[in-house]
Length: 66
Image 1 (tube, rainbow, N blue to C red):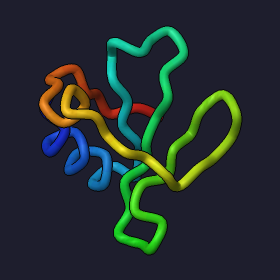
Image 2 (cartoon, helix red, strand yellow; image 1 turned 120 degrees about the vertical axis):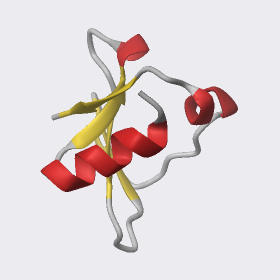
Image 3 (cartoon, rainbow, N blue to C red; image 1 turned 90 degrees about the vertical axis):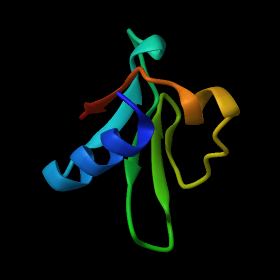
Image 4 (cartoon, rainbow, N blue to C red; image 1 turned 60 degrees about the horizontal axis):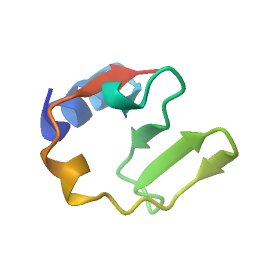
């Protein structure tokens, strides 16, 4: 699904989002309305920095995850 729809569904359900193309070990993102913006959960722990690429923004393979 598109990024916008995935974020809305994730926030509604208290979950994160990920791209299907990154499986089997995706990086997943937890969108927030806090100063942290988006929390990134990856193999190396948590981060609050994410600079999406143009491909990330227009991708249609986002899913609700976590």
